Amino acid sequence: MRPLTEAETRAVFEKLGRYIGENIQLLVDRPDGTYCFRLHRDRVYYLSEKLLKVAASVPRNNLVSPGTCFGKFTKTQKFRLSVTALDFLAPYAKYKVWVKPGSEQSFLYGNHVLKSGLGRITENTAQYQGVVVYSMADVPLGFGVAAKSTQECRKVDPMAIVVFHQADVGEYVRNEDTLT
Image (cartoon, rainbow, N blue to C red; front, side, top):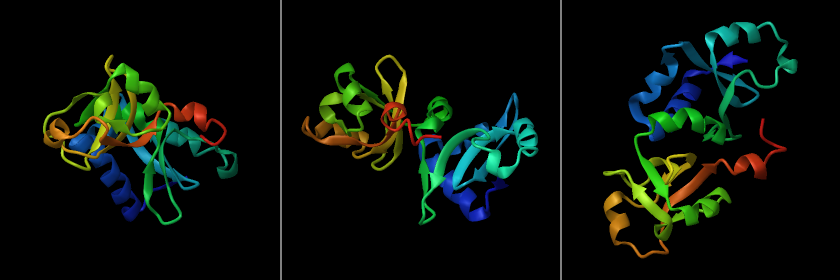
């Protein structure tokens, strides 16, 4: 387990910035202590400095998951955000999308959000902006990328894709043997 390099930190913060903007600072400097990001086996973990000190005493090959996995680096060094980061992204999300109850299941099966399943969308959401997807009961379901801006969503036909699927809580069931 090691600190992120400058390039890795930039990649992680750019990806997080798409979803929570300047609120990244609130993830690091929290009222209950200071938190940090560490890399272990190509995965980026989010953990408190107290937990970091405890994890330092565990041998590397015995260490499975030192904190909350925020994502992983691919072989081409691109950062992919994981669904396990959803609980930390949802409170700070700048742009949100609410899906209708009939479309929740479709999204949780890994499908994109269509205009017919769109309940609400945050004003001034730009195209290709990272969004957190909520149910109409304000339960975070996952996150994705806006395929259309807020203004375009008003004009498109009901079968047009408005949010590209990135990750959802249904992955816990679909990929339970590979998630760590």
